[in-house]
Length: 365
Image (tube, rainbow, N blue to C red; front, side, top):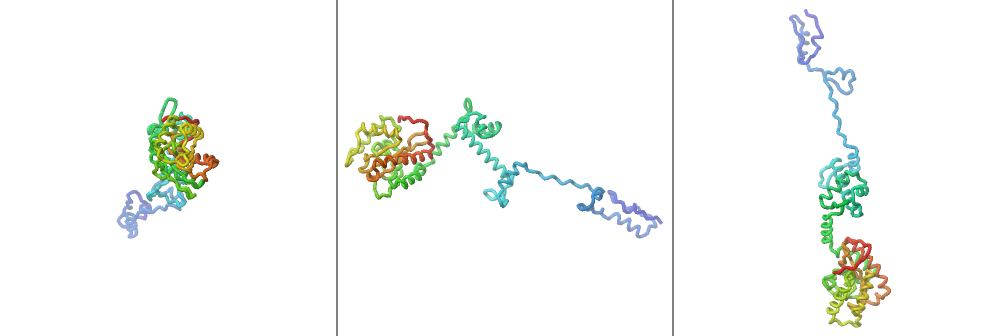
C-alpha cells in the first residue's frame, strides 16, 4: 500500500490538480485526493490578520485610490459660502457643490474688479500701472480685465491710456430716460412740505411756459390756482425764473416780454409786476445766488422761493419752489428758505447724475 503523502493532497496550484490515486489506496486516501479537486482555495482574511499572513497571501492587495483633493483656496471659499445647515441649493432648488459656489464667487470677484476699473478711470487713472495700483491687482490681471472692457466698449483706448467708453454714455442716457423726474423728486418735495408747511411745486420748461408736474398743497388751509398740468409764463413765476438762470440776458428780456403779453388781460391788485430794467437787474442778482423769488408777480398775495434742478450734463431741466401767502412769507423768511430749497434741489440734481462744477458759466440757448 502506498504511504500517505500530505504534500500531494494539501498543495494547491493554479489548476488545483489532485494527487494521483494508485491501486490499493485506502478509502480515506481516495476521498482525500478527490476532495482536493473541488475544494476552493482557502479564504484570506484581510484586516486584523498579521503582517506575516498578509505577506504570505498569494493574492495581491490593491492600494486604495487616493481621493482628489480640492485646492486649498477653493475649499476655503466654499466653506465660507456654505450655509450653516450645509444644504447647498441654488435659486431653482438644485443642489450645488462647493466647486460651483467657488466658481460663482470667482465670477462675482471679476465683476467687482471690472466696476472698480471704471471707478478708477473716472477718478483719473489712465495707464495700466495706475489702474493696477487702484485695484491692487497684478499687471497681467489688470491687462486682461481692461482688454475685456475695451472690447465691450465700456472703455476707450487713447494715446497715453484709457478713458470711459461710449457704452457707458449709451447706458447713462437710457437710465435717465427710464428715471421719471417726479419719482426721483417726490421724497424731496415731501421733505420740504414737512419742514415748511407750505405749498411745494415741481415744474419743467415747456417752450416759453412752466409746466407744473407735481404739487403738494400746504397745511395752512390756503388755496392757489396752480395745479398739476397747469402752465404759466416762465418770466412771471419764481419756479419759471429758476429755469432761466443760465440763459443769456437777451433771452431774459424776450421771455419777460412774452410773459407780459400772455398776462396782458389779467388784473393784478396790487400790480407788482416789474418793468423790464428792474426785471433784468433782479435776474442778474438771482443768477449770482442760484435762486429766484416770486414777489406777487404771478398771483396776488402769493410769494415763493425757487431753485433750479440740473441733470448730469449740468443743464437746468426743472425747478422746485416753496410758496405761501404774504403773512407766512415775509422777506426775512424768504431769505431763510433759500438754503433749504437749494439743498433739496441739489439733492434731486445729484440723483439725476449732477455734480457741482468748479465754476459756473452762462449758457446761450
